[in-house]
Image (cartoon, rainbow, N blue to C red; front, side, top):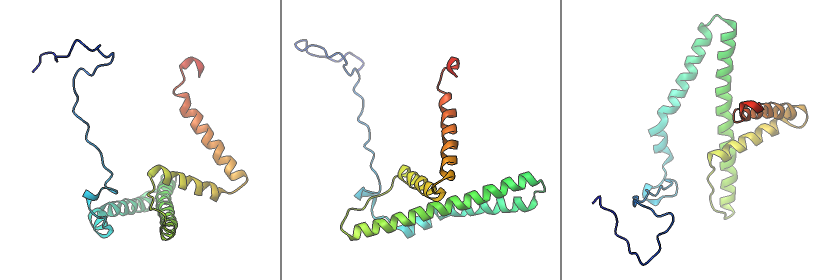
Length: 164
């Protein structure tokens, strides 16, 4: 079975011939749209993966305990900031998801097909909300300036040392 494959000499040999036949890749299917995965049961999903929310709540609780225990002012401030960030991030995500579901339900009622948000689209919506919240004026300008600086700093990594 290690001998060379027999080929006819009547046809010219293609330039880029596949020497070894590779097995076909498995076709990946999105379980949301695959009928073999069954119907989505939100209650079952929450029961099965509810422990993740418990972990997150425990982490926030531990943060709160650390805030109470620590005596160092700067460390305490940092822990409080992390705790507040996690809460606001979660609230923002839930709010965006809720708004999207509401608008999508209205669209489905009007006869349009259901559309599921990708993670990148959710992030774009979050960014849009952030811009809207900053409003017109200096808030947006400051945010964009910080973002530009961050992007330019990360792009410098890819430049050769001579041009930095």
